[in-house]
Length: 184
Image (cartoon, rainbow, N blue to C red):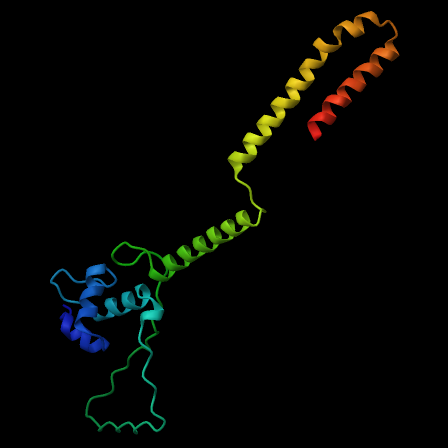
């Protein structure tokens, strides 16, 4: 059995509206009967609320008041195990949504990567892949067309030549001319 939203707000030192908003957004779980389990809600509140939106703790007074000494009782003292502070666990929150800090870190990482890509594109370090593919295709087509035109242009000249060294020199010269034209 938990406590009411108003009681939890007082215990947490926040407004009732803040607690209702946290319940509505799924940042803190609510029990089946509509109450709030403070232990579960405190862990979920810490895990799912932005640290920038959390209140700063009140400063501790310099001279704290001395703690009252307990009166002696006839009953022996109850031994309690020391409680460890609970740390927020990474992973999904109670409502199934991811932890706020993790979600924010992921979003900021993607934003940083997109900003870097945009910067590199604007400075000319990064090119559009489609433009590069189109240019490469056009260049390859020009090379192919230029090289395939050599046999039809040289056939009659080479047919009249009988010296193999001369044929080789003429073919080499024609290939060089074709490739030089493409490099410009």
